[in-house]
Length: 275
Image 1 (cartoon, rainbow, N blue to C red):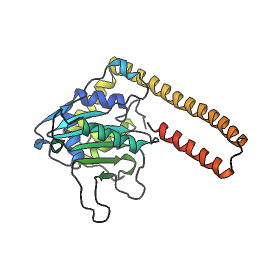
Image 2 (image 1 turned 90 degrees about the vertical axis):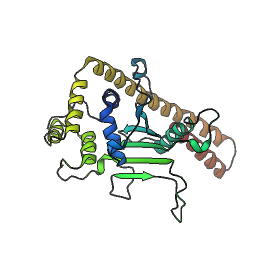
Image 3 (image 1 turned 135 degrees about the vertical axis):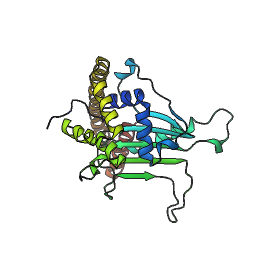
Image 4 (image 1 turned 180 degrees about the vertical axis):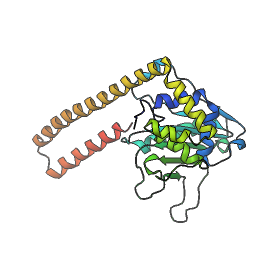
């Protein structure tokens, strides 16, 4: 097996490929939403920019935001599970939803807003299904409150291991994102599904360019800097927490009071680290 130097999960490649090939992105979105591509009347990428100066920034995320007919949609790749992941997605949804209201607009005109996450880890352990959709429902009657909020998760780790066929575009797209080897890409391409062949050809073309390699170099260093910054923050936090505990022990407070203050401090650190 020959490992791919870059996969469809590489966020730099993900953004460049689909911004440069919006017809592929439209097909992917239609497939993930389970609607015919020909039913889409208006399709627009609202954040196509990929300025080099942002590629090296820590905590920079390369999601793709779109308008699909009268809906707002955000699509992202998440490779590793991180603290505050679900809270971040809810924040993204709220940001997209709230910023769609023009000045002087009516709340009823706010669009349906959808967040789609393709994730390379197990998020929902209580189901074998690789696709989960969440909407606001009444907890007993399961009565929908509104159709304007929708969060989709596609868990790559749960994809079935059965042999791929040309008739299932959803599994083909997700298998393309899951693929880690040249042989897996060749297997998908051998099915001669036009949109898959186009996606793999675009992948090969982009990953061969100097522009992509430079952008990915900047992203690589940004990820290293991000990991270092988070590690240093944790270490500094441990040192400060140790000093605080010493002071608490000297304060004469009861053990119950000290435990409550320590637990409150850790809870605040966890909350802060998730943003």
